[in-house]
Amino acid sequence: MSIREILKNTQHRPWDVPNEPWKYYQEWNSAIFLHWKVDYYDELKKFVPKELEIDLFEGSAWISLVAFSMEKIRPKYLPYFPPISNFNEINIRTYIKSGKKTGVYFLSIEGGKKISCMIARKISELPYRYSKMKRRSDSYTSSNDTFRDLFKIQFKIGEEQKTKPNLDIWLTERYALFQDSKDIMNEYEIHHPEWPLQEIKIEELTVNYPRFKNLLKGTPNQISYSKGVQVVAWGMHKKKLTDYY
Image (cartoon, rainbow, N blue to C red; front, top):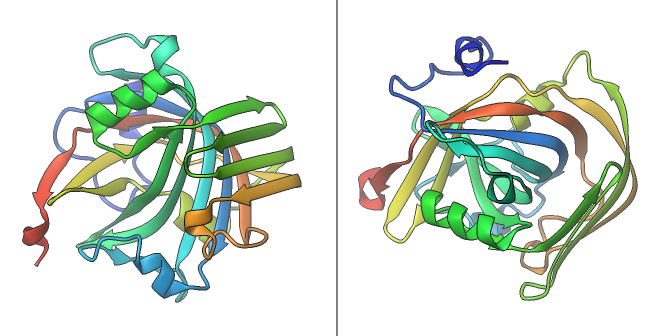
């Protein structure tokens, strides 16, 4: 799909795309979605800036681990460069509201290439860090000795979800990102076609993130897989934390 076609495909969005030029293109491919309903709401609040409101689905907060392949990331007027543009990524996120917009807040972002993490952290100011990653068509592993984090999954991909549950739509169709940096909240807008979701069967799973041990507990409550989406992103907007009050 061309970028022009992507930008015209907006019927699934909760608000209009920004009225300004986009700045980055990227693809989020072969995505594994693992979602947990949060039992310890006060524990989740420790990780989310007080300037943001935790979004709820039918009264419950959620946290997700999304493991995927970042591909073809590039600025608007430049070609992508595979040694930097293509890398595996895992993010752990929760769901928030800021004013009239709903979005995500990252508790953790890991990338499988050191140079890609360094450049992404510099440009986006998102908290990228390097972890050792390896993926195949039916498995994905990640480890980080510094944080003692470990993620392993063995899986089989199933049929396409012809009718997506409302919860899956709520968890995946997010078009804003909010991330704090010192005394600033960075706000980002993105756009992509609606996620095509498939069923996934987990054959083996290890999720050990000591910092989030009370949040990523037991078997995920909701799981899915996607072949991926093409993503258009705009530049960050900085807002002082004091402006939220």
